[in-house]
Image (cartoon, rainbow, N blue to C red; front, side):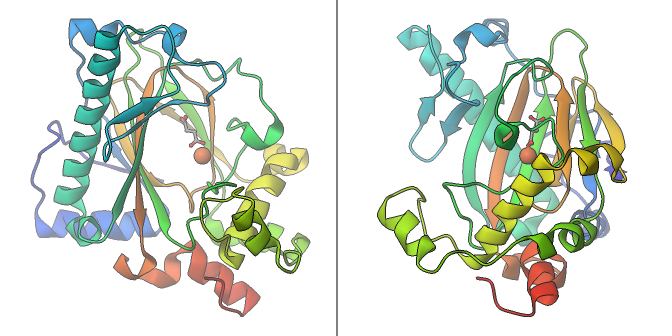
Amino acid sequence: MLHTFTTQKWNEHFPDSTQEQAINNLEDGQILYFPQLTFSLSPEEQFFLSPDYADPHAKNISYNIKDHKLWGVQHLSDSQHNQLKAMLDRYSRYAHGLIQNLLPRYAQQMMIGRTSFRPVQISNRKTSYRKDDKRLHVDAFPSAPNQGKRILRVFCNINPNGEDRVWRVGEPFEKVANHFLHQIGKPFPCSAALLRMLRITKSYRTLYDHYMLQMHNRMKADEHYQKNCAQQELRLPPGSTWIVQTDHVSHAAMSGQHLLEQTFYLPVKAMKDETKSPLRVLEKILRQKLA
Ligand code: SIN
Ligand code: FE
């Protein structure tokens, strides 16, 4: 499940054979794991390692490197706001550099998404079941359809107190899909156009997005499945980094505090083997085009 690297620098260069192996492992649904790749904070930045600056109404603190906007924060002075932005900007650039060096084939075509900072302890967080990431799920977003693109995420545990990020990882995507897909009906006619018109979705919710979102919701709602499906616990210690395609790998975050995460979106045509993408797997099972 984990493919481990000894990398200690964010701008390390990787030989062709390592790049090849990494892309194969990632597309097979493995997690690329860097136990010694640490993101260091300055003494001033350590100040942000507190839930006090996270807006309780937002799921995470988010940053957009394209327009340098930061949101989901509270109680920060202007200069602290800028300092936190600079920290997330640096993480975003480091994560981007890592992907460019390790997965150059992806780097050419991928789009950069949000950077997030998660300073709130997850084990005692109360939310609705759909938002509860302590339940196994594949990532799919209700308001931001990705229309078949892959979701690639770079996570880094920056907990200062030695606390692991504890995940559960579930069964392979094809199994998840075969388990849940037959329970899911087609969307109501015109619902995608309506959702778009009402600005509930930021772009058109394709059939792919419909099935992925329904799978996400049904996995989370199914208590029996959550307890009994094949799964494994993963403990990701502070000072470690990991890369996962979270639309493909069934995952749940059980406990931990202080995580950085950078999202990238990747067109399936950038993959080495696009038949392994959730889009193509679902299309094969349902025997129709979905995006
Ligand atoms: C998730 O992507 O479901 C949560 C990951 C985390 O916060 O550790
Ligand atoms: Fe997730």
